[in-house]
Amino acid sequence: MTMKKIVIVGASSGLGMRIATDFARMGWRVGIAARREDRLKEIKDLYPGRIEYLAIDVAAPDAVERFYKLIELIDGMDYLLYSAGCGWLNPQLDEAKEESTVDTNVLGFTRIVSAAYRYFRDTANVTAGHICAITSVAGTKGIGLAASYSASKRYQWTYLQALDQLAHSEQVNVRITDIRPGFVDTPLLDGNRNYPMEMSIDYAAPRIEKAMLRGKRIAVVDARWAVVTALWRMVPDPLWRRIRLLVPEK
Ligand SMILES: NC(=O)c1ccc[n+]([C@@H]2O[C@H](COP(=O)([O-])OP(=O)(O)OC[C@H]3O[C@@H](n4cnc5c(N)ncnc54)[C@H](OP(=O)(O)O)[C@@H]3O)[C@@H](O)[C@H]2O)c1
Image (tube, rainbow, N blue to C red; front, side, top):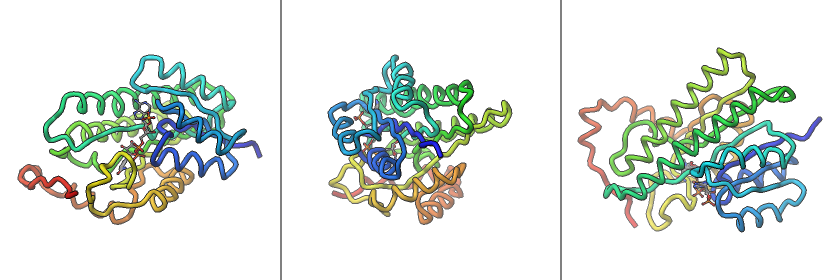
């Protein structure tokens, strides 16, 4: 059997880093990308021969060109995992935070995910491609404490659904997996605050990997968060707007 290949964008920390090392341990070839090149090199050095890296800023115009270069470095791609992301609690609507959330989670996401789709569509020797993205339960409704983050995650959900329909209609052999975790203890969260139902990386990563390998269309991580989001969805908008916004305590 040929060695499977995965490219993980957003692999210098948190979930992406953990999943990259797990796949390397499973014997896959892994291409990793993010902005912090020193961290990428350290991760590669843990599994030389299995992991290759390339610094990519998804918010920069050369992101797609560099993404294709990374695919070449590992001689092809069977799976993409888009794990790049940023977001803050930002009730002040600080401009820089709002914009960089959109740059990474909307513009960067679109660049990389659409480039992966075109790669799978146009590469004759790919038998089946797989596009996975870590979105979030935050896309369920607009969240006043994190406006751009919740809106960007909803965008990601919709984009992935659109690609799934396009692939079906064009008979492109690509599976689309939307992974929606609740809170996970990674550098993305302000580590000083207590978030409700927070999961460890050790707990969340294997559940994400299972969803990826099974090719699930949508996976909420974990079951408790699936119940919570189902309940959120049922809250009527006039009631949702009246919910008291509480910043998690330090
Ligand atoms: N932690 C949670 O509670 C939680 C919950 C639901 C969903 N998620 C989602 O899970 C994904 C992974 O986040 P995480 O929790 O593992 O946080 P993280 O540790 O902060 O990881 C984010 C990754 O994205 C990369 N990144 C950020 N901006 C980038 C850019 N412009 N270009 C390229 N890479 C960029 C970062 O690397 P560099 O800084 O080196 O570029 C880092 O590797 C995100 O999409 C996040 O929204 C997280």
